[in-house]
Image (cartoon, rainbow, N blue to C red; front, side, top):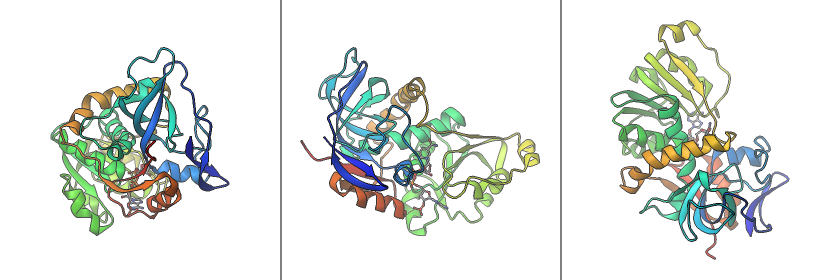
Length: 315
Ligand SMILES: NC(=O)c1ccc[n+]([C@@H]2O[C@H](COP(=O)([O-])OP(=O)(O)OC[C@H]3O[C@@H](n4cnc5c(N)ncnc54)[C@H](OP(=O)(O)O)[C@@H]3O)[C@@H](O)[C@H]2O)c1
């Protein structure tokens, strides 16, 4: 098979042996695979793949058809359309994936949309519902809302009956984020739009002090992205006074059990809304596998609305 391959800090498309599914695993013929910030960090040598995942083939989400089943894999049949989160190796023509982390592709989703859906909808759903317990009628703030996770979180917040405010630093993207159902604002002075019951932090530590000040009583801050900085000063008196909570989370390094649990929750709560057209996967650009380096460059340049997706050659 061909796969995007990291060699000495550069991306190439190289030939690799076809992987073979082991017990409980499915061989997926990949049609599309979304890019994520973690891929860019892996390329730069700052985020190695977890043990057991291909070390040199990046990619954390995929969509494709079931090509073969390993021993005791029984959730899917040959030819089924599946998608899911993997620890690495998604930017390839083939991958083996434990069947428990795979989900069916909702009817109506194109391959490119499906390839860009698992990481951002799983991350957003886990952060704002499982971790932060967002409830209907509450006020959700999403920082960095024009990207993949942000566009997913805004839509999930609206779909559950929350009021959603979204910071978007590029004025030209605010209308598109507003069309998802949020009040899209300049990050400058965002606190004036609070108080917020839940804050999804996708940007990082520079927002910490204002997040705390703008937190409602009993509010929750969920830290998922820290590209703008990881270290800040925490005023514990404000945190106490708000009876607030701050927690952080990552998905990639979680054990299989945990990932399977998040997949079941997304299957139950998110996939029906994608199938009904209530939720959308905004795809900013699609690149063929042989232009993987251009796709990474586009992702790193920023200023996109939604996802960058790699499309695999038709076999
Ligand atoms: N913890 C986890 O499990 C997990 C899972 C998925 C993602 N993440 C992280 O969460 C973050 C969001 O992921 P994503 O997939 O949505 O990424 P993305 O598609 O690249 O979107 C990031 C968004 O944040 C904005 N942004 C970046 N730096 C900013 C800054 N300094 N000030 C204001 N806005 C800024 C970007 O704006 P521009 O386009 O203008 O740059 C973009 O709209 C990333 O850092 C990613 O690595 C973590």
